[in-house]
Length: 445
Ligand code: AMP
Ligand code: MG
Image (cartoon, rainbow, N blue to C red; front, side):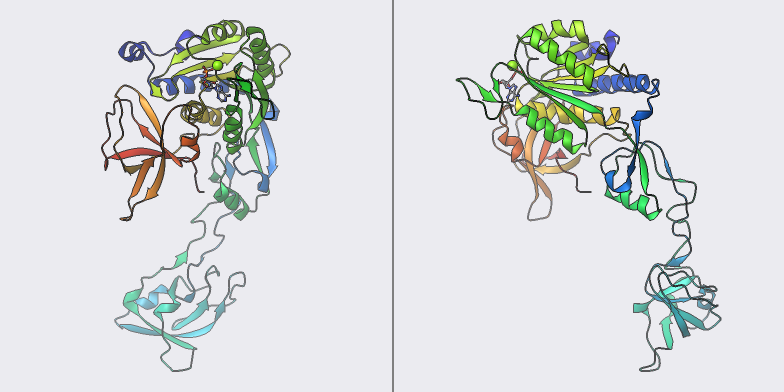
């Protein structure tokens, strides 16, 4: 990889001394694209899996799914009501009366023709009978003869010819893509595939993501906490984040701040995984020997990013380890050690890259806006991710309030939050009542 890929564009460095988040994202997306084309060139048949439809949620569709049929397969009624020919509406009469000659049910079509002055009682989804193109909804009709449902009447002005009818193929047409390649499959996609009678989908293999935590002070759950030590929480946050994306996880545990141990762990990860995410050991002072190891194992840039939290980050590739088949490079993210910074940098940089590498076409999480419930201090020149709770005010407007102390190590600020308030690079202080960008942690569908 060339220097320009992982290094910041020069103007960004000169302006602020650190890298704009957008420039970092562009550099990451560019390198991921390069890895994707290299991996495509390897033609590995294992890159695509055929899965039963009920196993495909959150997987990424590898090829366009072409509809084998028209949906709906025939013109049918969109309402419970009475089907007739729309020509009957071309009359000067304010009210028309029609004789009910039978009933059409969903799944049980009416055999026969509906003639002039006649109609058919019809259920939602039932095929439109011959001679009918319009449905008058049940609630528009009345019975002109008391206690006799064999005649109906309705006002002609309530309806236009062709109304309340679904046309054959209006949802999907045979031979056209019903779901396009690159779709992150959601519940509606499973339903859509099922509505076409499709039992299996071709999806991308799940990429393997190795994770490790680095730091002499880190202990695993169950170990004694010596003075000055802390439990390793980052690996568990990362496991949660990766499980949400339905990726395969290779847990490489805790690695000491020791060059030989780090080198061994990184090479092992490079052998097994498509991506390595480490946390810790990239801040000033510690980064020096990580840099040295990276020079031997791959091509990695050490970035100072204009963001808070999450300033230091390493990014690049590890060369394919010997014996790795197919000989793919491993994408590397060296995230900062602070627990909130890990989650913010994951959200901002890693998530999209993983989805992109796994074949997804749409990787950006949606951003919405809400009213700030309080003033927020903000210095221009960096992007900030504040943790907040989005809720509805009494007047119904979406409002965000911050979750207490916003230090990069205070994981509770994340745990209590349901969204980030994202304050852009050039943004200054926020007053209560201002509109701010919000990224929700959870999607609904
Ligand atoms: P570092 O980037 O290694 O200097 O770490 C920055 C801060 O994050 C230090 O206070 C570390 O103790 C803390 N930290 C690093 N790794 C972890 C981890 N895996 N879990 C919890 N805290 C961590
Ligand atoms: Mg450390």
